[in-house]
Length: 221
Ligand code: G6P
Ligand code: MG
Image (cartoon, rainbow, N blue to C red):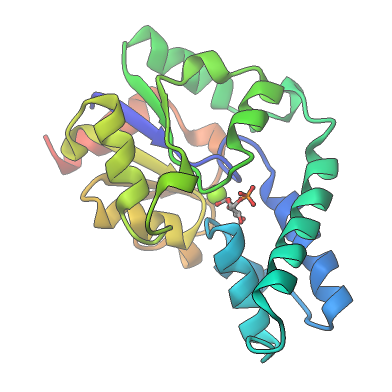
């Protein structure tokens, strides 16, 4: 295992709840109810694709112009940005700082493979930017998760083969993306959502460099 590619929201920090809150507020405004079960489909999915899924759910996919949709996505993002405003290193999920330190000590490369355009700002707020050897810019990708492009690009940026990487995700679309990239996948959360991962752990506290290396060598080595 030469590199680990991390998703951000729901893996490094619990911004998944803020995305949910912001989409729920927009949904309420346009008369579309977003519950936790539907929200699972939005995890890992880009801002534009998420809005399209929400409009489809409410049968309103043709109800708005492109300009109106852009305005709605901006409104969601503005609320999201106010929700993440006060984030600090205290918002790192359990075990993550320790894992980053372990990986650094072992000279294992670290990359960010998040669909979020707010990713770099959040890493700064968490004060962990300097752990990351590479950050994939989601704005430059042709296809979002579950397409493998983001994880394949991450491996390329780090200069390693996909078979030398482990990807960590909390979303079904993200696990599918890692698997389609032919990488070993670790899902953090419930097996009912992440059953396709090479290994599922219930909490980020379970993520250690040793666990990732063991899963990688049992699968690849
Ligand atoms: C992550 C989150 C999604 C979010 C996407 C885009 O993948 O899991 O919920 O929609 O990033 O985030 P952004 O911050 O660019 O709107
Ligand atoms: Mg996520």
